[in-house]
Image (cartoon, rainbow, N blue to C red; front, side, top):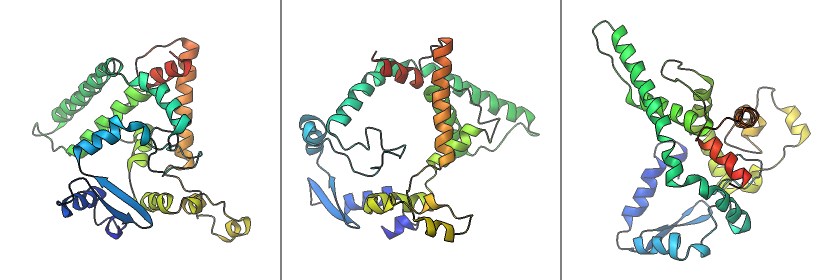
Length: 261
């Protein structure tokens, strides 16, 4: 785990190594992740039983985002199971049917056409009629604009407006830097400590530039980012209700789910 914390190894490589190191263990293999026991299921039939046939016995997910204050704690992958999980699943499942997902394909196509127009424009403006493309940056900006359109109902052009607000928020959310890595391991292995409220005298003793949330009451998103996302979603929903706007994106599906439709 030290290699992952120091960003020498990728977590996917660690998981793959665990899988490949024990080929004789056909069904499952386990290890310790600091103080936590971890089991990797290798057998496809056993996976089917856990995920489908005996699903009701395996409701609980890994308890990472335990605090109700975390924006990541209220989704299906973080809830511990029980009635709250069942209620959340019954609310969200109708919003993710294949027919409703297909309604968002035109938004993805629109963003793709926007990307192509940006590339054509860049080629025209080049001296020799060609440009170098950083594929990771290109696809990241495309994905960002798709999420903005399909999830939030926003029209964003991250290819021409390189540093737009939504792209900056998305970059902060998706970047797994050292601070977030340490936050992740703290939430897994010492969740009680991660939620500790700092003592007043301790706070006053620290430099004004020191950010307490980075040490205690840990979360992946900064307060400013959480507030920005909150205003974005609630503002969009309020505007649509006032103007009776219907757009078949995730905001609309969740508004319908809220109404029980």
